[in-house]
Image (cartoon, rainbow, N blue to C red):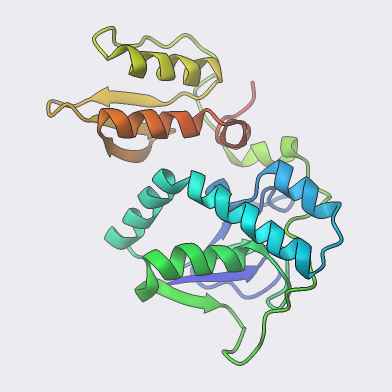
Length: 230
């Protein structure tokens, strides 16, 4: 089952952080795929945090999730193939406004309804407060979050690109390497491309699909959290 909760609350199964910056000393998994962008978090912290700004936050976060659909589908497929108990964690208490509730509604309930376990410790008749809470912590910096993503690959190292790949694929791979993203992209006999990052299988993609996935991995949001700084 897939649950949501807050760091200080009850955790069922494996704890997975989906806040932009995990708590100091966090040793569990960090899944930035479901975190807000730094820009959205900064905007929220300076907002009135009233009903109107909450709706605007949800609108912007919805667009962010839509822009990550290819990677989200990979995550969904993994859990369909190998369902496990996990709890997606952030900072806010169960009844406070938090982006994890939106992740639960728009991702887990939409794509994995049979695995949705709900908010841990929140009974069905308790209303989630839309007027309180924050969507991350102000005390953690982007530098501190990088300690949770170790890699033996040095960013921006020279990585050979297969010259037989289409020019568009070569170009987007070069941009990944220039950005310090040590992605591995192997062309299969069927013509599809097998993509992995830090040993994590990101699936097999057509030429059009691999361009989309590699483009997503170039974004600063992923660069700062998927790649260990030198």
